[in-house]
Length: 223
Ligand code: DC
Image 1 (cartoon, rainbow, N blue to C red):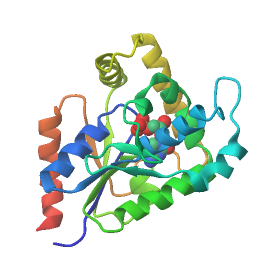
Image 2 (cartoon, helix red, strand yellow):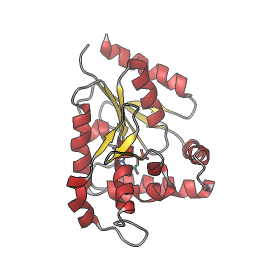
Image 3 (tube, helix red, strand yellow):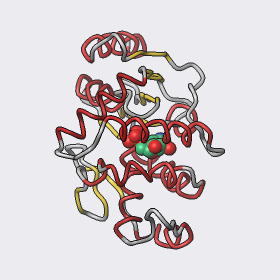
Image 4 (spheres, rainbow, N blue to C red):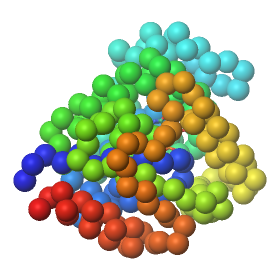
């Protein structure tokens, strides 16, 4: 079988990672959540006092890049300099600042190089914002996942409550709207529907139906 790269792009909380995980499991491929990588860098900046509500020391974070190792365990958990930080990267604190980190071109270059390395051996499902447009423009198959604001708020709220995070629906809504704005209006690699991407909607379909639609499309490429 040829080496396969499947990309899934879309706005936050549309369900990209759940679909990517399910596709990866179906084919025995590796799943890479590229958003978690930007979140890991944001967590690093906050943990090292380079980013808070009042300041963002971009230059210092750039200087630290050579010392920052971001990878995934075999169970797809995100690891920062050897420490698993799956829960930390999902906090509201990280969510509220990650778009500021993700809009800086140097941090994007750092991530894109890592993401291409993760994809080198193929048989990878990667989800994010610019995966089909910038990271792997020649991917085997590209999906773009959409969902209504209501569905996205409900997904994110339920995820946070399950993790024990104290948050209101209004806060979740405000955070998603703010990130949408920054992610789509930034100059470097804004969120777009990649050329040749297949559009999927998470509004009516559940994960099982979405997986069926996606695997039917992917199987056409594998045969
Ligand atoms: O998918 P997510 O919500 O975990 O992504 C977190 C942030 O990272 C999001 O605000 C945009 C950014 N991101 C990006 O700019 N490019 C990617 N490929 C993935 C995420």
